[in-house]
Length: 395
Ligand SMILES: *Cc1c(COP(=O)(O)O)cnc(C)c1O
Image 1 (spheres, protein in one colour):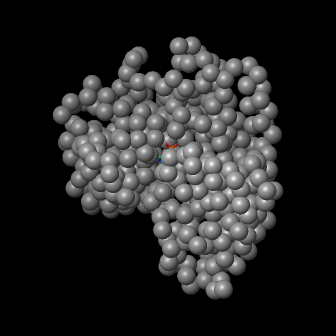
Image 2: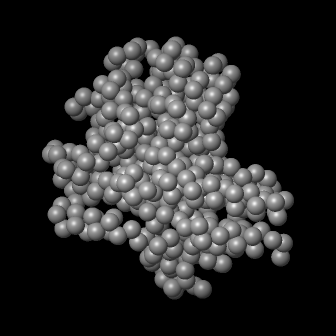
Image 3: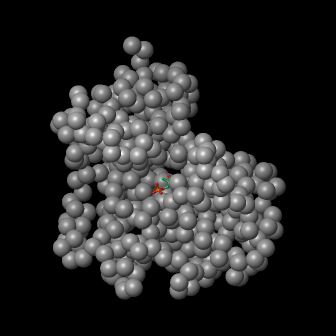
């Protein structure tokens, strides 16, 4: 199988990616097809992004209708799809005000700016430190790569954005030590995504909330990957009973269309006034139409219930698989954000699975993660397990 477009791609792109050698053409249901007509069962979903699969007719119809009306108008004016989507986010989150942007990194940038400006204006200008977790991932801009607690992402970019300390995830005592009167912002992924699908412990998030309240620290949850139904609730924090001051979103929010967002509580929202932050494309009527359809699907079309059922089924299936394969060290995750940790690197297994018509993605060297469309079916989970079983069996 060789496609001349692959050679062309290697010529014309910067070399920051190393794609697998197929050229994607279209999707159908929870399957993706390449240019040669090969069919792949999709457990990647464009990296936890194509939440509704590829044949969700209400999404297609809404997007086509919106394209016929208008796709962009800037934030100099109001548009109805963005107001509708923001209203839904406010209702579902229990937070108060929304800012739309275009990606996860931009959402985290916006949250950092809002948090910093709120602290500066309303709390204490001497509070400047930012605390994030070791093994975290928050994006690829200079600020978000700086707050990402993995040195491999920092290499070659010094000097980084300053005043950041990384602390041990799920370590309450370390958190008590590191948060001080000087701390402005604490940022946590309730489930670390790129860091290996590691859920926070409830005691850790509860302690984080309590310390942030006591010390006037802005608590930001990065739910770019784990939010918007991925774990079986709209927000992962719903399952912890802990509310952040700001939550950041992207990936699944647009079901494959480009969007990011932050939602802030009323207090922290005071940090922005006209002119303090902006995004030209942010909140455009096309991307927010997609978000509106996704949020309706979660709540009104029973998708959240489906994620809970399928998530439990996926976990049980992976635990069964683990019994047959001692090379699987651990099964972990929540909802349709699951992973297996292996006793050796997973690159070959992922390439072999692709050959057998299954798309998988790693999360670190030894971990395979499972982040399919939220519309994934039980029979498709069975098919995935069947292929994975073959791939993991000694040849
Ligand atoms: C993917 C991701 C980001 C970055 O999102 P982009 O849209 O690639 O900028 C930030 N945080 C988390 C938790 C992510 O998974």
